[in-house]
Amino acid sequence: MSIKDLKTGKEITIVDTTLRDGEQTAGVVFSNHEKVAIAELLDELGVDQLEVGIPTMGGDEKAAIKTIAKRGLKASIMAWNRAVVSDIEQSIDCGVDAVAISISVSDIHIEHKLKTSREWVLESMVKAVEFAKKNGVYISVNGEDSSRADRDFLVQFIKEAKNAGADRFRYCDTVGIMEPFKINSIIKDLRDNTNFDIEMHTHNDFGMATANAIAGILGGATHVGVTVNGLGERAGNAALEEVLMALKHVYGYEVNADTKMFRELSEYVSRASGRDLPIWKAIVGTNMFAHESGIHADGAIKNPKNYEAFSPDEVGLQRQLVIGKHSGRASIINKFKEYGEELDSQAAEWLLAKVREVSVNLKRSLFDKEIVQLYRDYKRINKQ
Image (cartoon, rainbow, N blue to C red):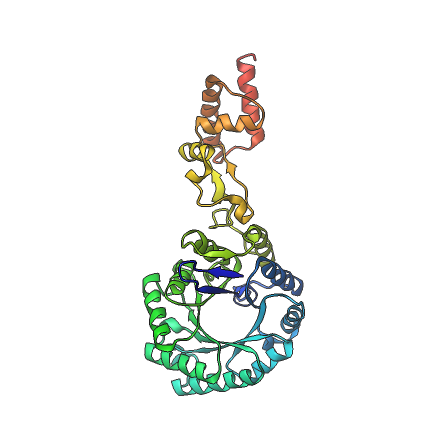
């Protein structure tokens, strides 16, 4: 996939971790068939790198990773590992071409989770990176809980990873505490002090995962980690569809990806994960292009650009004019044009009043059959 800032020529690599971090969502399990299908859909869409699982888990997990690695996909296939040589051996056995080596870098994790020291963290990371480098795989070193790490230690950690042979550093906002302005400054600082490729990996605990991911890119990050629908631990990760469409339409990046697949991909992952796809979901929710409010619907009828940032077919959706309590005359008239009926002003006003009355009683918008029935009532009352 080519994601390029046309002003600077800078390219961004998309790293999808739906099959690893996405599946770590509490209660989510993908079947092996689903994992392969999702990998193929992501590859067809144009994602650059797929983080597909954790080989050291063994069993079905390792079998699925091996199958994906042998699929001949265009995307790079990455497996996740602790900073443990035996983990990396399991990944290499799967035939992946890239490994993520993850270890905590914040003092709170080092002291209270690992119960060790910064020196031990550095030694373990370097040993794992050097082993992976000898085996010729691409290496991402993940700083778990980077956003709570001491800045000087983080710089030291990145430099030692780079010297050991790593290819990039994954900045992990593990508990989602960052905000865009701060994270932008941090990434600029890390880039200036290390001159190393950085991947953004942001969580959505405060609803800012997508904003933080993009802020990191603007700060100099070269890679961005995402999941379909923002699936992921707790409140989830930055959503693939949101990041790409924001880069394209808000920031003017060139996005060479088949974005028309977004709705299909989102629906499949929603079903496979057992997590509903909300109708109000940004980019892929069906309400993205649904208009009911009279003023909005009238504007959309005259020119969709009045109330739509991009065309629905760009993400595999369709425009909808919803008839309900907030509809106006223009929506009613336009709806009946779809049925081949030209309403006069009297009929339109009568129907509008009835639509609002029925909608309030039912506490919802109306189905087409209900609207047609109201029109039949109008004709019967007026003996037409």
